[in-house]
Image (cartoon, rainbow, N blue to C red):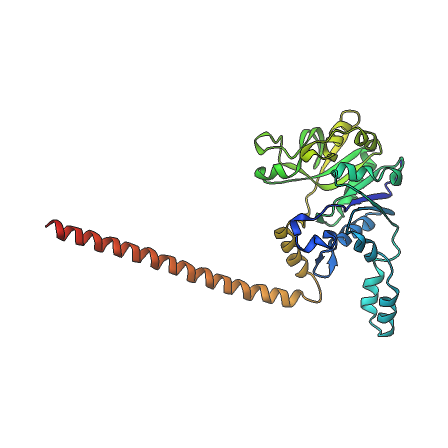
Length: 324
């Protein structure tokens, strides 16, 4: 059995949900407090035992390459000023086995993964999407690798989502639960209408795939959004070899939209040693202010209702007198 050594991180998306910030910068470089989102993904890969990482980039994504490259002037400046803690932070992103290739046209996630064919070769590999930051005692990517070592088959991370949100995800139709949290899958459906969704188990941005996926991607017809969908290729792969679904039970932070990004920033900030105490105190004070505002608004609404009722009663009395 081949060891899982390689990871592919698609990062070629336009980031339209974060405009205007992403007009001239990579969405993946937006910081959660002081760390770019893509660094969380790379760290998960490294902590899972991945040795080589390919990042699929696109236009305006050069800052990603620069972030993981050395900056000699900055390093020398920090060293001369004896700012060794900052120097250590900078050096943590250097010396990794990172490779980059461009996706020239946004043809979908399946097309982006297909760009990794030469890099992957004939090995199993993981795909890690940058919109999902995962937190658990054992990194999710390592959980998938552990499952592969037992099943010798592709396996996809899934998580239960509200049924109304199934149209936002690839959804699995489970055939049977082989063991706790591991499903044999009947089919994979890309972004179904909630009324047609076969379950509430959604694909959440971590995939462990065998190299046979590439032949299917090369012949895959465009699907949802007129794009080459990875989910469709996985569904076809499942017809010729087993593809399992691994249910993730840890914390998932969706940084692909503004509200999810803000929630993640707050959650991470509450664990950040430099700001956690001040942030906690600020949130408590802000909560008091918001509660006071809500109470004041509620009182104003009650007073308005009472005022309307009084005016109605006055009108009724006036009409009654006029009739008499």
